Length: 481
Ligand SMILES: NC(=O)c1ccc[n+]([C@@H]2O[C@H](COP(=O)([O-])OP(=O)(O)OC[C@H]3O[C@@H](n4cnc5c(N)ncnc54)[C@H](OP(=O)(O)O)[C@@H]3O)[C@@H](O)[C@H]2O)c1
Image (cartoon, rainbow, N blue to C red; front, side, top):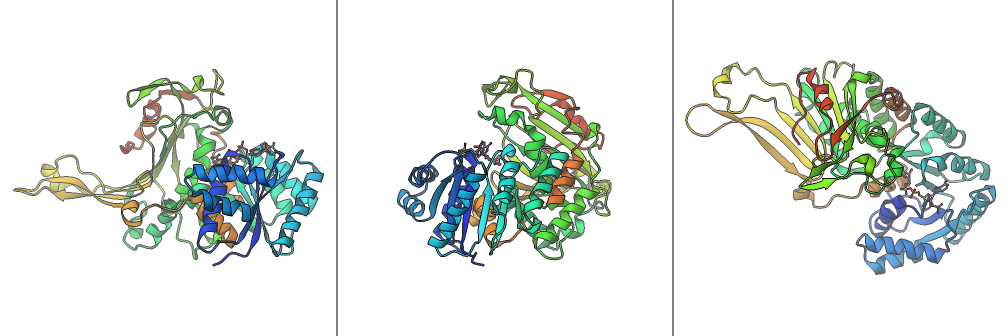
């Protein structure tokens, strides 16, 4: 579907996210495909830049991202503009409104507007209030609001942000963006589960022993210490991105693939999830250590981090989903910085078969079949199964079937590109609904209140030993990644 022609205002257009992700995605969408030539992009920020100064900075960023300088120059001069918001007061938004109307007139557009908030969290409420005060929240066509994570920092703040948004916008016009949902491999969890009849009959407590979801990073805070101090692993990754992976893995098939039907099924998963208890969660913080022979600083020595910081750089949790499908199956989530390797995976371990027949013949332990869905890097699937080792007698060992996206499809599209096209088309399937966000914060309430101990782990290790003990009570262990 070709999107209606529109003005897309990027708030925080001078920032890191705008230059690294949003504007490059808009450029690529303009090059080819259904959105080509459909968007007039208006950058907005407090900085006092002219159109030309902003265009030069966007062109520079695009070239740094490997884009052709001529194509980048052609796009910015044809489709990119800038409006300074100065002190962001009421006058600034009145001027912004006039500028949008003038661009609409100049380009013959019918009040179809997208407002993308690439702003720090404290700037959300005043900006949303300003939409209301200036009347920019309503138009003769449509007005869509795109909100970046984090959506609040706990349940109370998420509720008040939702209430504020709903004072001025209808929920159906709000696009809460979690870029994980734009990743091809994450969407493919839906295709894999509901487009194949092979696995669905096995996808339940009768056949599955445990499910692990890991988001591991080799990197530390990389100069973003002061930002990370206010976030931590639970707020940055677990409560949002990992909960989305969990929901897609655990949800029932939606009746249709649209925003509300998918959100309804995801909400049911979180409703069935027990609130996390202190004994279900292990938090950690990296201490000095070594990785690949290189000595690494501890978190507290990083720039912008307090020497007494209690911010967690690692979190592991055991979750229970008390519904018909999942009762009794433990879900284990873990994420951390300065772990031995970068890996985002969902690992589904099936129950082991009754091994009696093969007991004398097993070479390395009779394992249950294991399905590994690798979301990055090297995106793909591995399915392990038992084979007979060729030769005399009956000896078994575990082998794998492998599929890699790159081998079949080459490079995958950028998540932001997918999501921006969906906003332009008005498709909310890959966005997060208000009740999902609030329920998720509710389940994590006992984890983000600062009451849990934070264990040290050496940089370059798989986190604190307590994270292994978390699994021991279910007689499980983390899969080697
Ligand atoms: N960077 C990422 O990779 C990433 C990934 C996922 C989510 N996010 C989220 O996306 C949002 C933007 O991230 P970012 O890294 O681009 O942030 P940023 O660079 O700190 O801020 C973006 C822009 O917002 C403007 N700004 C800052 N404080 C403001 C205020 N109080 N009122 C109005 N404008 C203000 C600044 O421009 P002016 O000073 O010119 O106004 C700044 O260039 C954040 O909420 C972040 O958590 C970022």
